[in-house]
Image (tube, rainbow, N blue to C red; front, side, top):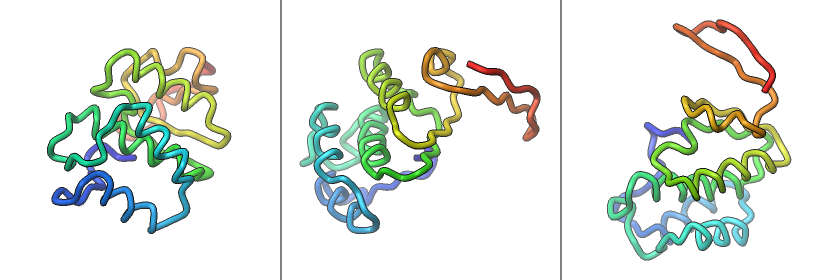
Length: 130
């Protein structure tokens, strides 16, 4: 789930985007739809009608319903309110496989991660346990 690369077909509704994306690989569609409902996202809206936080929540719903062995997330809580940020933190913590995420949000390390890798100019500066 990369911030700078949007996965949307802008002229299609979220529902149409959902149908297209979930045909590309295996997803737990029921889980994805449940997350979309929990995040109160309107599937009839087009991506350009959503806030950046709502767009992120749609992508998070898809990512966490993919059951991929490794998720790569770029700033997963950016532009989210506190309640949704906490939900995403719990999703990361409870995901049964590996989640690697880049974040400037120090709250994401509290009780969520196993290891912190600090990068500076493309090189590992130090590593800490959470």
